[in-house]
Length: 116
Image (cartoon, helix red, strand yellow):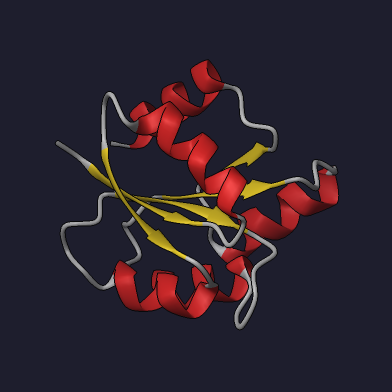
């Protein structure tokens, strides 16, 4: 089963993501960008769902650091900010794609399957 790293500091958002993913994927959680960078070095991680606004290190900086070491690891940005500028910022930082919150189950699963 493919393993997804959910980088999300908000408990209710994390619970929602686990509900969406639990039937088809394994998952682990990082509560901030620094944890996400550390956990992304685990070769068993197949994809990251990266919240943009997190404590200690935001998702954009974490994405940049991860892509330096694992450039082929797919990262999908998750954010409540759904402006085009937010999408552009996420893609510029190295995210492969972008989902806005609240996440639609069908769209989320479809996007994940596009990358793994």
